[in-house]
Each structure stands twice: as structure tokens, then as C-alpha cells.
Length: 311
Image (cartoon, rainbow, N blue to C red):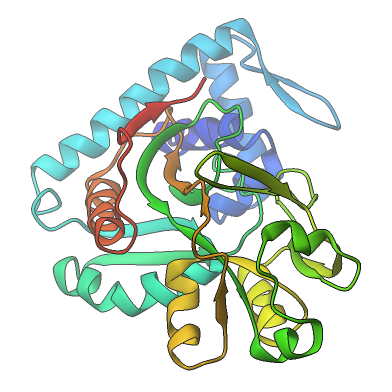
């Protein structure tokens, strides 16, 4: 038995909660993962995991052993880095997931700068608006907007997106231009619905000016769960939509979208980088966090404290 392979397989099974997922992320067979865990338990003469057809759970001994193994593997990676150029020139594979509109409009166009700074980092970039399980999907970190769900993940607030209401000129020509947000509740007006990944529902939008405050739901003909598709529906004249300014700016300049309710304010959307507290923050993840924070400071500066931890 290769002890390093066995320890790596053990931590991956614990974090993924599945032998199958652990095997996939390690790029080995499920049988090999099973054999490594069995050999590890035989060597230690203790049962580390309870296995059922549906899930894998730690024994009390396994939980204690896992904490030691995580620290050991982190120390080993740090030791390797200290004897190489990895600290000053990070290298290796980095797996991240970001929202699709942000990737298309801000992140991907800026990637040449990241690659120029860190040419030895291989970036596996997931682009989606879905809920990603950082541990089970073996992702180093995710960027997400909105209020944080209850989670044991470490979350670093790196920016805030300012929103506004917009509509395509074609929609306004057909339905008229609403002058007050309350008009969106009228039967002849429509909004484009955005389905939240957390619950699959369309959330209302709260607007205010001076001492006037209103919650707008509106009626929708179509609701979508992807940011780029959401924008496309608005450009096609399907209704009023709520967009971060960075998504709307070019389309406003080109006359494809018209701003609405400009005297009204809405709460900004906080943006967080989230990663597992059980994972060692490698040199490549540290430079990615710093670079992305720098990028967000330019496009969506935050006025809130930048570091939080949710439990």
C-alpha cells in the first residue's frame, strides 16, 4: 500500500461523501479507492468509515484521524513548495466556478493578465449559475453573489454589484414606459424572472427613494436560471429586468436597453469567494484570491468588511 495514495484517497472520500465521486476526482477506479481505504483500515486496525448504499459516514476514530491527515497533507504540500519555486511562481491545477455573466463579461477578458503573472497555473474554470458543492465536486473555490446560505465554508467578501432596472426599446414601445415601480404590477406589464439557484423561485426586488419603499414582484412570461439567458430574454423584449450595471452598460450605450426608475435605489448584491475550511490554501489559490479581489475592486468595489466566516 502506498500510504500517501491511501491518505489522499481517504480525505477525498470524506470530503466528497462518496467512493464514486472520490474516484472521479482522483482519476482512478472506484475499486482502487475501496482497496486503498481497506488497506488503510487494516494497517491501523480500526474502522474509519461507516458505509451504506446511500452514504459514507465517519466513525469517531475516523473523524479524529481525518483532522490529522488534512494537516499532514497540507504540511507536506507546504514543504514541497518551500523547496521549489512554487511560492514565488505558483504552479499546478486550480478548479474554480464563477457565474456565467461575470465570466463572459469581466473574468475571461481579464485572464490574459492572470496567465501573464502566473503562467504555470492550469485553470479549470466552471461557468454556471448553479449551486456547486465545493467539497463533493472537488472545487477549490467558487464565486457567488447574494446572501450566503448557511454553510461551513470560508467566505471572503470581495465586492458588491450595483443593480438597476432596464427594458428593451421594443418592449417599451409595446407596453409603455413605467414611471413608477408599482406600475410593474399592472396586468399589461411583464418582468423577466430570474430563478434563484438556492430555491428555484423568483425573488421580489425592493426599491426605495427618500421615505418611499416598495417591493416589486411583477408578472413574468419567462423565468430563467442562467444570467446570460436572462439578459438575452430582456434584450428580446420579454419584459423589465434587473441587471448589475456592468451587464447593462454596453447595451445602454448601443441603445439596446433603456434604464428605468433611475431615482430609485436597490440593495447591492454582495459577491463572495467561498472555499472549504478543511482545505489547505495553496499558493496558487492564494494568488487567485488576491487577483480576483483586485479585479473586483475595479469593477465592483465593496464597502463592506472583506472577511467573514459562516458556520
